[in-house]
Image 1 (cartoon, rainbow, N blue to C red):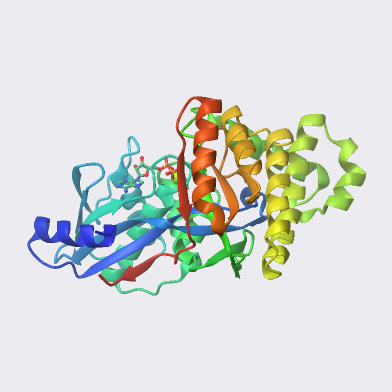
Image 2 (cartoon, rainbow, N blue to C red):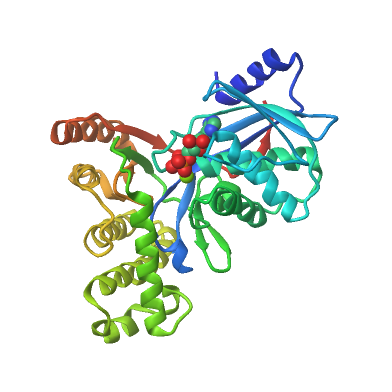
Length: 381
Ligand code: ADP
Ligand code: MG
């Protein structure tokens, strides 16, 4: 039974009727363009085939009630008196979306529904953005406003950044809102312009979850952001997006060594991400894979956000002849890597890399073969 069918049935069991709508919003994996989003640069994610689903129906009053299957919890809130978050509970993501929509002048109405997802939580595939966009879509279904993917992405981001106080770039929400089946999306994080690009034929995308998580991600993330801002300030530009690698190379010595490495990662990663689009347009999986490998090295050595577990799983993947390229993906320090693999060897790749990493690292990884799915939408069941 698909998860969409499951939320449908469980809605029926909980509310004694058919849902009026079922909405879906996906998680994501980033192929290339890491730590570039908050530098106004380019990212190249795809929406994965794992998502948050909400089955819902309108209510006559202005309250929202949501049952979370995954959290085994049932929460309600009043749209006219949104409770401020005191800790980050799952329902605070939905309240934050309501808050951001209200601030944006979107008409809201009450609803009740049932939520479930299969984006693994906290592994860097952005279950949070999936939840935010699913919530936005639920409000859209009952509220009767226009759906603009970029605007809804900004609503989701505002919920997470401003309501919950968790700093993120715009990538996760943008791809969850605007993903396209079979395509990765080149996103210009300054203009929010998106360019859908078909993934090379006869390749598969494999997500490699190391199973490791690290607690210090937030402070390291904030430190990297500050370092990037310092480099931009030094060059008198709004963001590291605004300097090319040739100009940077001439002036790199002006920067202190750590800041120089951080900036070099971001500036070179932006160039790689644009080259990745050209490789994809040419259907050149080899070239795309090489860019992914170079991205990992830059993240490991210049940006210093990899980890022994990520390096180990990336090495296992890259040692496979059927792997075009693998790299860490997401903020880093743990979590997931992503590999571009020859489709006809996907099963063997998954088996061998799973076993190879387990014997090297001592814990079993989770490997997901994924495909590019559509962004947030109302679906039929
Ligand atoms: P991720 O890397 O998966 O985005 P986050 O820590 O940013 O991890 O977000 C995870 C949080 O989002 C969870 O702790 C929970 O509060 C909320 N969440 C995500 N998916 C679900 C879900 N299916 N049901 C309920 N809450 C969810
Ligand atoms: Mg998240």
